[in-house]
Amino acid sequence: MFVTILFGEGGMEMFNLNCKLLNFIHHLKERCGLDFKDCVDLMDSSGQVMNLEAKQHSVAPASSVLAERQHYVLLRVCRDDESGKRKYVPLLNNYNQSHPELIELLKKLSNPNKEPDRTVKRGGRQRSKKIFSCDKEKLIK
Image (cartoon, rainbow, N blue to C red):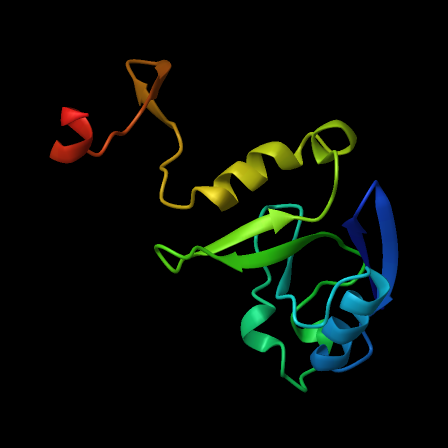
């Protein structure tokens, strides 16, 4: 049982899932050249974040969180000083060239409150309809 982690300049490393999650995260940071104090996470190919930050001290098996034979992108988790919200920074360089499918997934991850375009079907035709939320302060600016 293994997973492939994408990071750096097109780097890929395979990791064994037959270990405790605590050890998996420690080994991940070590092999990817990160500081042990860094908070990291992984994003799967559908754009879902695995939320490793909350499980970093877990003794549950890594296979209980990660799916075998899957590819994950390594992310650094930062806190925004003003809002306190989590911000994810991909640690895969030039992903827009090597993995263009990740561009939209990372945009969604960076702007989780932004609603995507919705397709509305009327009279046999499909139209794209954007849903906007109105905020008086934003309208004045």
